[in-house]
Image (cartoon, rainbow, N blue to C red; front, side, top):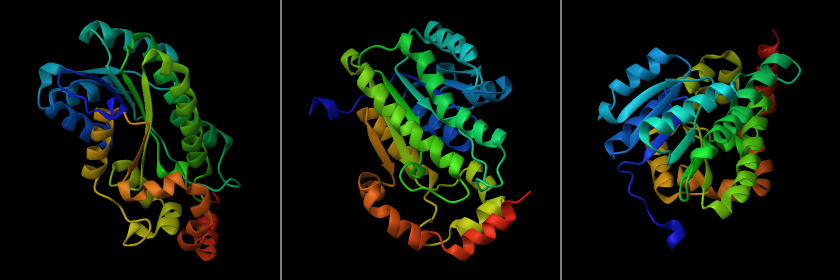
Length: 278
């Protein structure tokens, strides 16, 4: 089918926010090896520029500085990217944040910050990019399986990812008549600095138990990158990584209770709640 055709990524201009993180960097490298031109957006200009120089074809990459909590910065950067490369084909909204804590213990500021980065930050990113998009361009939000499976001690994170999925679905309908494609990818746990930080937190360790063999086992970052690249090539609406968890995303309401029973024991939650008290 035409809607599922695979695009050649050579010379495609791909913008990645949160590019300096583990996943953003790995994705940028893989896209660059396929001939894409890469625009890297990070909060620290030196990090984005150094990252661009380290890609397989540094002449086809450049770093920009912007914070996803600042719409004006993003608007200026997207305009500069479009001027520099001549267009924007793909935007990967990857910048994200996670802080553990129970609803009772977490501060209002921490909750609001997670929503501001993970949800409103993607809204700002896409809003800033929209004026430069042509038919068959693609907006991809990096979400999480937390969209469908909601974890204790991460209410803000789960809310941000569930809200992100709803926003992406609404936006897809808004721009469909323009030929612009919109999608989201929902990976399970995989090895990144963000995951390392979560597991180093006593609260996260109490809930996830080190992500050993079992329901919350980590998957290789290479698999998530490969699934993401395949989704970009197909302009996919919904991506789940690993693919075997697709059924969980599609039938999340049916699976929620069994997952809660198997994955989250009351004893573990009680211990995490005690650890979360500051």
